[in-house]
Amino acid sequence: MDENEKHAFPVNPWFLESDKLTLGGLTYEGIKKITTVDGKEKSVLKFTADSVSIGDLHQIVNSRDKQHHVAGRGTTSTIRGGQVTMYTESLKGKLLGLLPADYSATSPPPMIPGVKLPVPIFFTGVKIRQGGQFGGTLHIPNLHLYITEGTYPQ
Image (tube, rainbow, N blue to C red; front, side, top):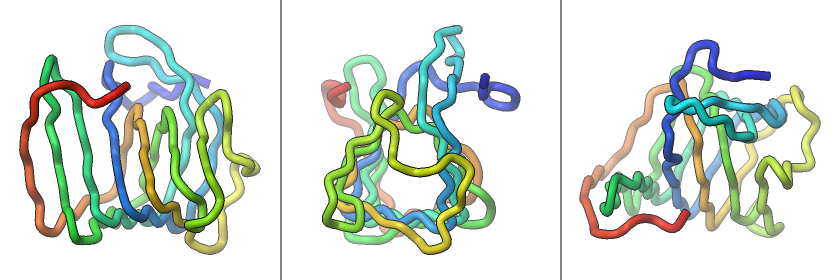
């Protein structure tokens, strides 16, 4: 299924690192194809969530030979106020803080597509490669923006 009905997906993914990522009302929607603004297709995992909490948020966007960082270190950032839709290229961490998780379109999570989890689920030591994300309102306490040289590992 083409997921570009309403969205323009970026050419390059962005990256998220978090000590703890909690997803409330999580639904795995399956493997989807998205088309980036330069016309290339890629397969991603589609998730929706009613709420997102991100401990020690660190977001990285590559741009030429620089990394642009958005950080809320030492705090919990939240996304609320509407359904969040995530188009995830890869998610790595520890499910419930215990079980190694390494999900991608070639290694999807052991979830039934379309079934909403009745309780929040969390991952620790999270590293996400995100193809796109839409919905909700992001609040980052203790926000820091900065730029470094080089690019985040793809």
